[in-house]
Image 1 (cartoon, helix red, strand yellow):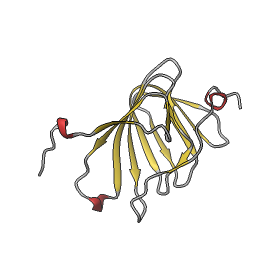
Image 2: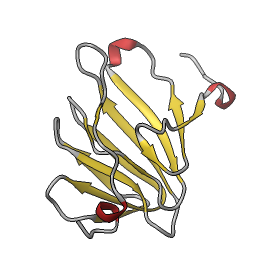
Image 3: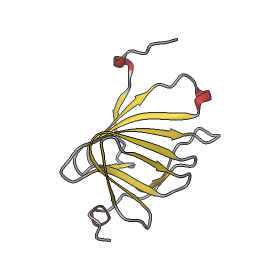
Image 4: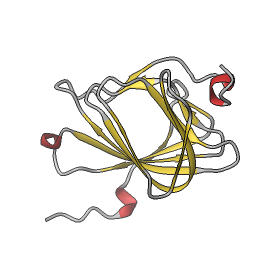
Amino acid sequence: MEILRSERNAKREGPREWFTGDVVLESIPVPSVDWKVSATIVHFAPGARTAWHVHPRGQTLYVLSGIGLVQRRGGPIETIRAGDCVQFAAGEEHWHGAAPEHPLVHLALTAMDDEGMTAVWGPQVSEEEYRGRS
C-alpha cells in the first residue's frame, strides 16, 4: 500500500493546442505503467472545451460537478451533469467541455495504446460548432 498525499497531485494549465478557454488538468497517479490508464480530473471554466480528438483505446468521463456539453462527430450536442458517465468508443471523434454559463469538473479515465498514447488531437471546436450552429 502507498498513500500519495494530495499535495503531490500535479496540476497544470491545459495546453492551448488541446483546449479553448481556461482549463486545469489535475493528474491522478496510478500504481504503475502496467495499468495502461491515465486518470485526470479536468476543471473547465464556463465555455471552455477540448478540441476535436479521438482516443485510440477509448475513454470514460465521470462528471463530478457542474454542467457540460459533449458531442461525437455527426451527432447532436448532449448536456451532461454531476453523476453522469460518458463512454467514448475507441477511435470515436468527439469533444467535451463546460456549458456556456457553467463550470464543469470531470474525471477522465483514458486507456493507453501500446505506445502509451491516450489521445490524437484534431482542430479546435469553433464557436459555431460549440453553439450548435454548424
